[in-house]
Length: 173
Image (cartoon, rainbow, N blue to C red; front, side, top):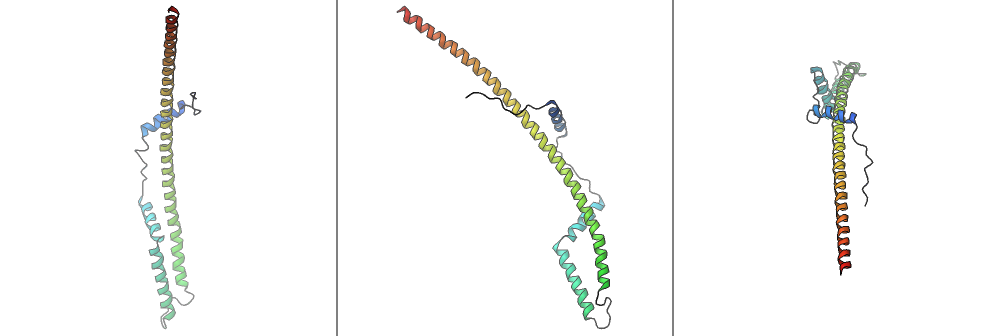
């Protein structure tokens, strides 16, 4: 079986410089730490509460109580049938909830982008390190092949010398 050089190109000088920078930064050991402000924490907490079954159930119970109390009340209707006050309250809730939830989603998207960038750097460093290891293994393999070829040439010379010796021995008989 003949030795065939791999088709993969060696690590370029630019890639090697990038690898040195990544080694200095050690991205795998230093993951990004997002700075979370008070508003970010509040919007995250608000979004997690608003996006839960607990909130949906509690809000549904409150709405049912509101409708039942206003529908059954004989004397003191604080919000009669078309429930305009309830509509106003729900509109206010939606008007404030949507932007707060969007702020939380935007912050989470920024965190995701930062983590994706970090993952890319870690993957790039790993790929370059593996490329260097391939290059080192290829170099060792080439050195080994040269040594084996030299050894083979020595053995062939020894065989030729032995054959010559045997021929001389046979011819002297």
